[in-house]
Image 1 (cartoon, rainbow, N blue to C red):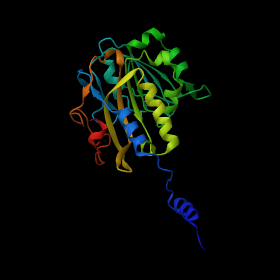
Image 2 (image 1 turned 90 degrees about the vertical axis):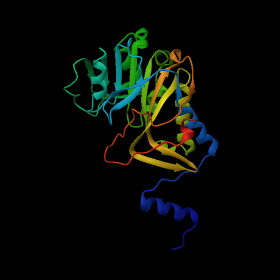
Image 3 (image 1 turned 180 degrees about the horizontal axis):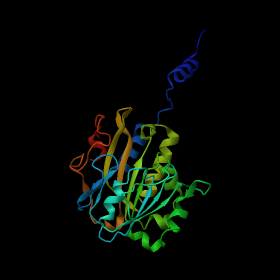
Amino acid sequence: MLFNKLSFLNYFTNVYNAKTFRQIEYKKVKYLIKLFRPVDVGIDLIRIGSKNDGGYLIPNLLDNVKYCFSAGAGLISDFEKDLEKFNIKSFIADGTVSKVSKMLKNYNFERKNIHSYNHKNKININTWISSKIKKDELKKSIFQIDIEGHEFESIHSINDELLSKIKILVIEFHGLELMGNEFYNNIIKSSLEKLNLYFTSVHIHPNNSSGIHSIGKLKVPSALEVTFLNNKFCNKKNKIKKLPHNLDSKNVIKKNDVYLEEYWYK
């Protein structure tokens, strides 16, 4: 059978379960990387949680933090357990597990997944927040979001008034190897531009579970952990001298680590 070019491409992708899409301009991918780029705001970072997966670097500004909102905590609760040392109560939402770690003492668990709407085992992120604390108390909160790709939906749907009050925000972004796709690029762009209205990226760390991928000349991790600090606390912004940070470590011990090129932070 004779194939034209399009037929052959469709045949190839179906056989090998590959992904194809029209590549967008190099500058648009580089712009997204710039939106992720962290800066040094003159505040030391500390590690909260596990030495590996489930641990994150955050600014050492927990003195006035009273609440943690964890979306997608799973069965690993080292992050929330560490925060209990600072007398921080955790509100946890995760519909993929029936309970959380027995280690936790000061928490509230909701067996629902965070989304942009309410239905059965799904809960709108604004509904979840508003049902736990008053909006003025959000200035005493830290958010941890690891919901396997639904982070973009939640960022788009969260009310700006609520978002702007959060002190520290930690998000694991997934599927970034698709940022060369025009549709996906727009989703990531609008998410980051919204976050950058109120927050500054202060740390990034690639999760080594899914490796690193090439988009043209650029190297992009599939999953990236990003720590944001509310702009109210960012009095200065200097370039990061090096990554990884001394407190960074591999998420998955048995897998090779992945490293970011300098254009991610310089």
